[in-house]
Amino acid sequence: MRAATAQGLVRLDANGLVVPGIAERWIVTDDGASYIFRIREFDLPGGGRLTAQAVRDSLRRTMTRLDGTSLGLDLERVRDIRAMTGRVVEIRLDGPMPELLQLLAQPELGLAVGDAPLGPMQAAVADADEAAEPLEGIYLEAMPPELRGLPSQPEWDEGVRPVRLVATDARDAVAGFSRGLYDVVLGGTIVDFPLAEVGPLSRGAIRLDAAAGLFGLDIRSREGFLSEASNRDALIMAIDRPSLIAAFNVGGWTPSERIVPPALPSETGAAATDAAGTPAWSALDLGERRAEAASRVADYRSATAGAPISLRIGMPKGPGADILFRALQSQFAEIGIATVRVAMDEQPDLALRERIARYSGAQWFLNQFDCAVSRAVCSEDVDFLLDLARDSSTPEEQASYLAEAEAALVALSVYIPFGPPIRWSMVRGDVTGFAENPWGLHPLFPLSGAPI
Image (cartoon, rainbow, N blue to C red; front, side):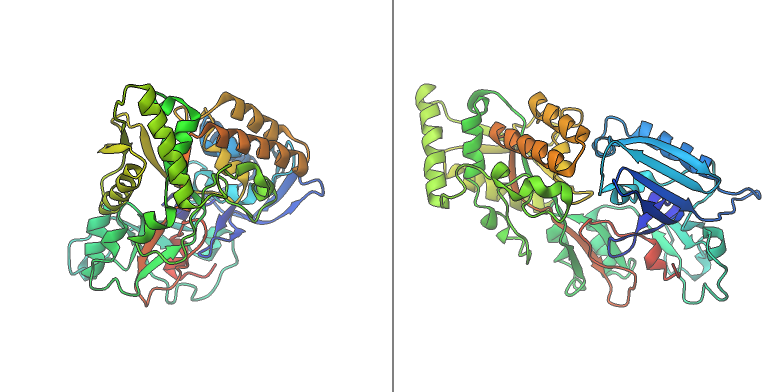
């Protein structure tokens, strides 16, 4: 919704690629430490023009608001935002930041200038006379090109359609899709994925994003069996990752034992290409891993008069979470650990973490465990290395610090990685403007059919 009605300097298209937004073009200095944007000639309601000063002020307010969030950490290398002339904005950095455009395209970085709609869409009034059922939700329509800083295009709205946006739970969304109320369902996760396979119209309509991100369990407790890193590591090595997801029948899903995926397509992903994030036991087969894990469990029980080990796993409600918990319960039982399921807010020992990456860099993955945003699963020593990475002057130096931070985080054994998160949508065959993409973000503007 925000991305549709308050675009930023740049935005994402249906394929997840960065395209011009308010900025019509930009350049990057040779040292990579400055991005210079030229904004469109943009008329605001009331007769004024969008100025570089207004864009600068909006971005500065946003940066302040994001302080203390994971997105704020991603943007910490931004040193200053300047209005150079009436239509030119410069963003100065402390060092090269190849992921900046991807970050500027995030919905949170959409520009706000008073109450003026900056598009590319705006709120519309629904035509209730044509509705077969009472209408709900928010109607959005594409703004004319000239109101988006583009040249006027005759008959631009031919074939353009409004978009009705309804926020509802997964069960109602799938039911509405089956009844023909909705043409597209967005935002599905593994927690509700089984619902997508129930409807009679689901065959061929389910679309999966090959997204990067975090999907696993945070080890939040440091008491009892979980007080020692070697015992926490036993949980990590005991997981049969392919079997964990087999019941979901998700093609193309690749399990991972690492926090930072290997071979990220980004300069800042260089830390993920070496052995820093590879567990010491990765060369062992599953049987050997579980034997070692069971031995550690037995040693702990022997040292504690045979007391049984029971861990509380925090899961949200949903049929996919039910399947996932049963699989985890069975696998942990293989090494002698009992588990019970609790709500996410009931102080679990382990808790599900599932989040899509905003950009393909090791920095994003490691920032998710910064103490500023993940107090229950973090380390000040790792934070120190991440600070050094943010302050580094070259990509090589940054990659070195990120590799150290990753190795230190892995040694703590505070997170059980499964693999990439699962994101699904349901789309009717006659819908245009939708495409799977690696960010799991599906902008509404392309669904309208309006010309860019």
